[in-house]
Image (cartoon, rainbow, N blue to C red):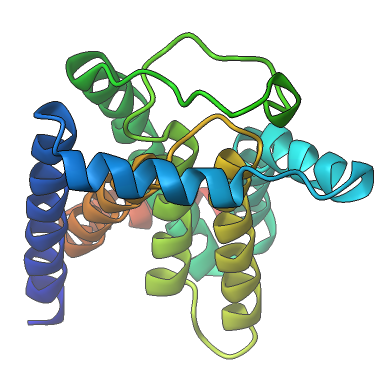
Length: 216
């Protein structure tokens, strides 16, 4: 029954994404106006130190942090860590091509900061919606909360949730994404993660194989 709830949550998240994507594609005036106004509030550099912190977060917070997290969970996380690592790997393998396909299909232009000085990183040429960073880090955070949450494990998971939030925020701060790009990425990332967690029972052969490898 618990696993069914993950399927329902995943479907609800996908529905939310579909609605949001349609508003973006058909250029809903009120939504895009709100999106740009919030973007301007967040994309407001606050000095060299904070700017550099945000640049580092946006640069390393996706690949570096989540590849390292998956590897460390597999090696040092025990039985539950290995299973969480397997789910992270599966989710990332699904989301990388899916996120790219969604970007190509929706084809939303990147934001235009008020000033060139407000674009703190190199301008990217691919589509803006959904945010690829938000897709990956939100998916990772969801998996961690769902499958690595016993006793001291929850501390690690909550730290990664905070890290995911900072990465998502940094994408707007540095001028690469609108807020709705980030929300769209969260809906996709958590939606796929929810379905994968809901399908965990079908992955038991993989989990058992991982357990046998570590015992050897």
